[in-house]
Length: 287
Image (cartoon, rainbow, N blue to C red; front, side, top):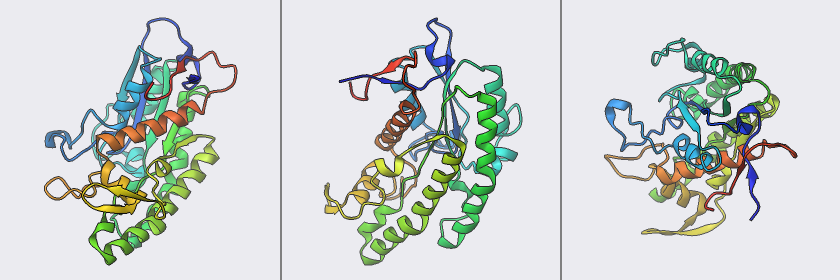
């Protein structure tokens, strides 16, 4: 099986033992939040997608260090303005810019997940305002990061999965809610993300596709339940959305789901490689 290149840029081709960095930015997903995490750390864990992506990348970048700046509840507004927590340089974006400036040429790649918390609540009526907020703020966030990182540093975002799909198991009303959640929330949000990242010239990790989020047609077996749509099965198996209290229902991915997200980022970052790059090679996941 052929190997694949891991990103590009000066940091990816360094042959010495100097540390290089992976900068992770965003909200609770970037922080690896799960309901099993310690409450005094806002339920953050060290098994989120950033942690697992770093483990994958260290196969070819053994001196890679991870810097996680994501914070639970962060929106595009608070990422710019601050307010949820204190960073030495101000907001999360300010902190990221300071780090990128201080380590220019030593950052292998950057990941970003931000925007879902622009929803004031998980109701359909909040979606237009949430999308408008993302449209106002996210392009500027990405432009600021690109300017600070320099043209050779890959920056990748992600589409979202639907943690409300487990409601499918609640009967006819739950099935209707699951379909509406995908069509009226996830689809427009991901369309918004795709357009903004495309305009910025940046790649997106296809988490929507990895979770088969819009596929209600393919039927698979879900343990203890029977045949269900594949998107429902994956949401049940890869998130805490179908867990009963006290751990659920919870919108966050579990360890397996975070692994899937990490692998989606891996594929997106590999796609940033250019023919003839001298960058380090990354073996496919599972090899």
